[in-house]
Length: 451
Ligand SMILES: CC(=O)N[C@H]1[C@@H](OP(=O)(O)OP(=O)(O)OC[C@H]2O[C@@H](n3ccc(=O)[nH]c3=O)[C@H](O)[C@@H]2O)O[C@H](CO)[C@@H](O)[C@@H]1O
Ligand SMILES: C=C(OP(=O)(O)O)C(=O)O
Image 1 (cartoon, rainbow, N blue to C red):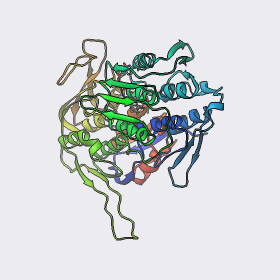
Image 2 (image 1 turned 90 degrees about the horizontal axis):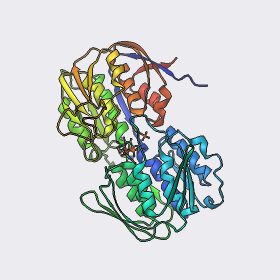
Image 3 (image 1 turned 45 degrees about the horizontal axis):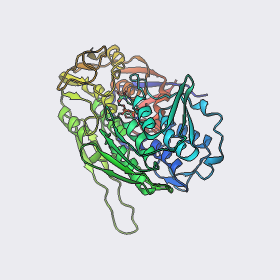
Image 4 (image 1 turned 45 degrees about the vertical axis):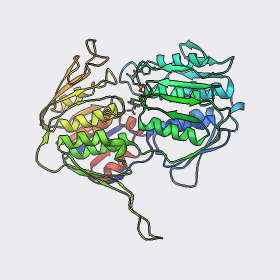
């Protein structure tokens, strides 16, 4: 049995090189897409994270054979037996991830019915699924909600439709894509999410035989096709993990090269990183002579010495600043001189973790008002979704309990930046989205051990 507590001896800069693999928020969706194909799919550079295990388990319950390919990180998914699977124990996956909701369309296409257990994922707000259900109903699904989950049928099949999302939700956009690709007729989705992970999922679906057009202004058009085949795909790298390590370099006054990190997907983050006073260099991949391996590209992030500067920032849908970058960045902002303002506009309860940073010596005040540029959906309601961070603060060690994935990583960074020895409880949650983070910490010279 593993002990879920990491003892972190903080106060030393992190230095070194680590590598990020395929993005958690693409890989899990690409795995679901494999269900839509009639032949096996291959995904490369898949990270060993808990969410991949959960989705593998779900696919297997539905009759997809999931196995490792010849290369490290290669996953082969063979969906040829889906029609004969019983999926009896689907409820064991209740609460473990948000991905089950994306099985609706693929299962309705293949089996004409689906059961979706209660969802999990990070507790960062109520996370309703009303857009998903509305969209599925518009495609022709009958959705019956019970206390254990959702039962769906499509007695007359699924048909293309015109939809407009009330907010450009990533999950609801993926729901529409995964349903529309094999629905009869054309689907037009307005106010769609256009995160790089969505575009990469569209690439996967196109490789499978789908016909999808991404228009300007968040409009996506999908022409349904009767059948799809398997794909081979190397996912976009994990830009959330890359930014998390970048923030760790800044908060600990260190230097980390993140191999695999891609500038184009991180532009907004890089602008903030530079505005705070962090420095980075994009190290492009270089080929060498034939027969000699080239070097892999990435981004090197470092603290240049001296003081960091306070900034005002607002999270938003793409191309805005990702909400998942917010928590690691805030730890770095505790070290910046002046008052930083953070307005979280994507999730209404994603600042709760700042309380623990306060116990470590950070000065952070949270507000219900929309501080910063634009009023958001959460203004004048009871959500503490803005924060003012006064720095620089001297962080000291503390006992911390990890509340969710990104907040967990930010607690870890805070413990690494703080003087003294912290105990971080519930650290296994970080494995949900960060591959071998303990190995990477060791490679960067961090001093930590399991209790
Ligand atoms: C596994 C995965 O990819 N997770 C990411 C995905 O989550 P996820 O897909 O769950 O996030 P969404 O983009 O759907 O959520 C954005 C906002 O829309 C709201 N909403 C969403 C659906 C719905 O039916 N009704 C509704 O009101 C949510 O409560 C939230 O306030 O995108 C988020 C926003 O980039 C990221 O933080 C998560 O890391
Ligand atoms: C919120 C996140 O993930 P999930 O949607 O899987 O809970 C995240 O990756 O930070």
